[in-house]
Image 1 (cartoon, one colour):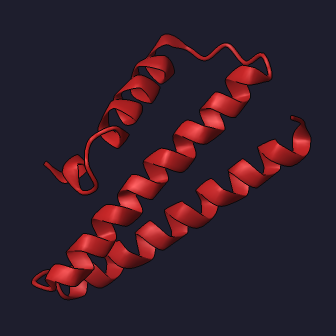
Image 2 (cartoon, rainbow, N blue to C red):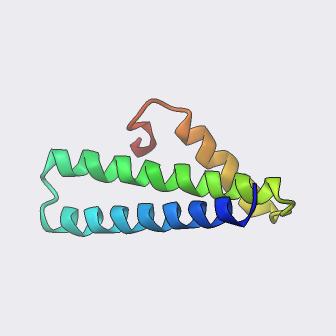
Length: 89
């Protein structure tokens, strides 16, 4: 594990955030589109998954995160353990 994995994880998170943002912009235009809401929720969950993966990669490389980051990581992973779509409430 090295810089290559870290860069891949940063890039994956960046793409996931961009995808989520694009879906959220579309959802603001058409808030009644149920399929779009599902896609947006799935995109939000992908952001959580990629962020969690990045943080775990950083931890394996010796990073010591501040307490709030640890708390958010654990919360994200708890949400991701729920069935698909559960993060939306």
